[in-house]
Length: 370
Image 1 (cartoon, rainbow, N blue to C red):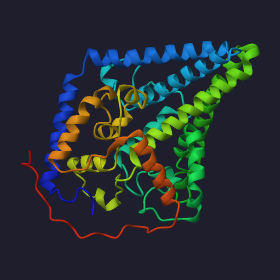
Image 2 (image 1 turned 90 degrees about the vertical axis):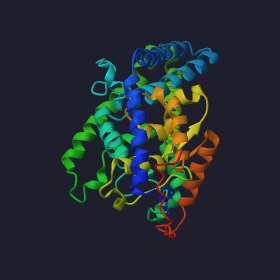
Image 3 (image 1 turned 180 degrees about the horizontal axis):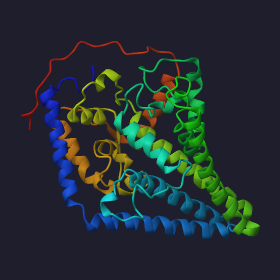
């Protein structure tokens, strides 16, 4: 039985109307303070990158190498998480700034932005945690739920999950190809080849910038600069993998079957987003460094609202969940990471393809609660 089964259709739609009201309020209040926020973050990120690369050029001094690598890693995390991810969601399109817009932004990672927008914004955010529809459910590599049929290859998933974390940007780029659709004829080889050429071009530019151009410019510090760039990219990849996995795979995150989608209403979509997402608790620095995906619940409810508003939305969403007796999966970073890796280990072993159904609970109409 799902944790949302007690709601009647009327209760579900009442919940949806409350969230629509919150969304409308935020949209109506967007203004100069929000625009200044994203511009400040972009400025800080670019200054960190310049400082990091300058320090790496002086990496014959060990403290300079460590400081430069750290600054570059933080700049890459900010660019990927708080800037690139959120700009490409269209969160800042309302500013009508052509330089900070989902149609023009290209972020500093292996995936071409247009391909990423399709696989992430369109597929994942539409079909969140729906088995057979949401390809982010285990990224077609991992078994993260009993609903996924077990295969012997999953025994090795703790090891290849570690590799995925290190090379996450490349895993996401290749995952965007959806090559599993080719044998069925849902996707042509020519289409895959076109996408692969775009990925190769993007990866080529990234490799040339980080692993050729800047190390060569450093002259005698070629090797330390190269190693610093490698370390910064690996750090960014592991952090992004950690944040994203903690947003969807801790214990309590629900998985749905395709029959759930039949005639799905706006309110039902909201409930599914809520039940399939998890928050990470922490302070402002943690939220900034996660791209505010520590507020994964709020992000999935309002994916195109500016990320700087999620912190103020979280208490309202949590209170609404209490009012409608709905789950709000939230925990510390340590708790959520531990939960994710326990699940990865547990699901590596054989288990039921589906949980046994539980007796249905009596439906409750909560329109008047609170």
